[in-house]
Image (cartoon, rainbow, N blue to C red):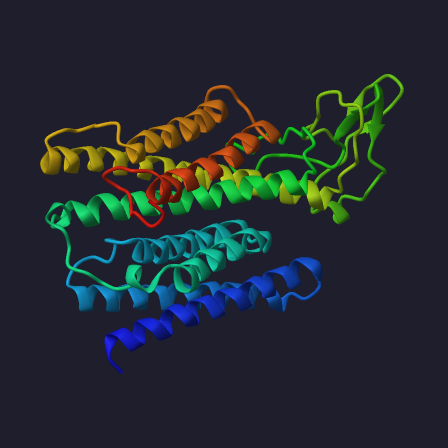
Length: 347
């Protein structure tokens, strides 16, 4: 089997594995009692990651340079990064919901690269002179890994918004680790009236204590209080849903915290490479402009959490917007814009 045939087999196999993995995660979310789906989903993502890594290695051997010179190669490298970050986040959070949101995106990217891109864009070609540099690997690979981490972190933030149904629930301690103290006696304000959750035993609440209040407003067994700002309507969330929301919020923050320094390093490396290739560190190319916008969005996210103490819905909304900005930066300006980074598919 030659390398071209191997690559064609691997890209189709990656798509098939990711499609099946997506279904496994969705079934596991619909039927939580099926514990075997967690192991199957993790195995599927690991197999897809290995298939894509083998595909990129075969491409590297065939072309003789690091496989990040065209859109087809970068899409598969992005998918490899997403599956790698997924495995890290899932192992940290022990939550199957991570795969519910990351597997469809990874599968969609693979389907786009395999089934939608013109065949001329899937073929390895000799590098243009500007790309014949060690900076190709150093700059582009770091940027793609940062996109992967930022996308996964943003997807987990979107999952947080779905789990909490968009309610403004403050999760104490979620920015400093997953061990923040919380109990199931959280309060919501509904049309100006205090609403408390029905009693639940400590054993049923994973060891958390409940806040018991009396007419004087005094409390006992207080570990932490999760509150919201007054809203016109409010829905009581189960302790399990709150625990899941706290986990998603924490893991999203950690993954974005990983992707942001990678993005910073990638932008700096790109400026050095641009100066070496074109004699200018920054030329306000559309790609450079949107990379700066992406950096500012996620810098604002981290600033709001670290210095402003934002948690819960507001930073999650900011991260969800960052998901769109990353896609514009990575794919939008490359396909629709005209500049030094354009692939020229549409224009």
